[in-house]
Length: 307
Image 1: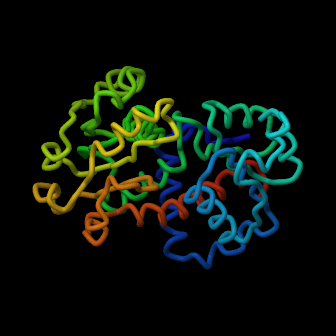
Image 2 (image 1 turned 135 degrees about the vertical axis):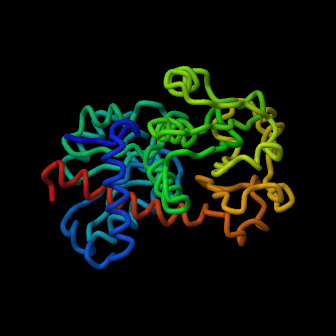
C-alpha cells in the first residue's frame, strides 16, 4: 500500500510525473471529471484548516468522487479516547483513501501503518506538510520553468513551519539550489534540518535576520506567518508576530521576475498592496494545490488497485 507521509516518499521522477498530470488536468479538466466516480475520500482533520481540507474536498469532487469525514477532533471519536490506529482501521471500512491532519507529529504515519487504504499526510504538527510542498513545487515550476539553479529565500517562522521543512527537503534533491534563511533568532531553522538536509548534501545556505537586504538575490521568496498555535507562551508570540512585513517599498530592490509564495493563511506579513503585483503567486499557489492533490489522489488510488 502506497502512502504520502513525507515528501521523500516520492522520487524526483515521481514528482515530475505528478506535476505533468496536474498540468494535464489544468489544461483539460473535463477529461478527469468521472475518473473517481463511486470512490470516497475521508478527510480526517483533527486540527483546523481551510485551504488544505477544502482543497482536498474540491479535488475529489472534481474527479467525480465523494467526501466523508470531520473537520475537528471534537467531531470524532477521538474526543472519546479512540486511538489514531483504531480510527484508521474504522475509516478503511468506509472510504477508499484518507487525508489526515493532526497536531501530533507522526500521527499520519501511525494511521498509514494501520489503514488498509492509502493515507495522505495533510500536515502533522510542526513536522511535515507534503501536499503543500506539492503545491509549492508546481507553483515554482510554472512560474520559473524549473526547479533547479534557484536562490530561495524562506522568511518568518522557520522553526515551527512544517511547510518550510518539507519544501527544503524536496528542493534539496535538485541541482544548483541556494537557501537564504530569514528569521528572528528565536525562530531559526531547526538544527536537524540544517544537519540532515543542507549540510549533509553540501547545499549552500546563509542565515540572516535581514529581509530587505536579502531580496535582490532571490528568485523565490517564501513568506510564512508566525504561528500562534505553536507557541507555549503568548508573550513570545506577540513579541515575534510582526517580525517581517513585506511591503511594496521593500520590494523595490527585488528582481522583476521574483516569485512570492506563501502557504497561507496570511495575517499581516504580506501587505495587501502586493496582491496585484505580478510577482505575487500565493493565490495561484492555492489553485495549483488543488490540481496537485487531484493528481495525487489519482496516483495513489491507481497504485492501490482502487481505480
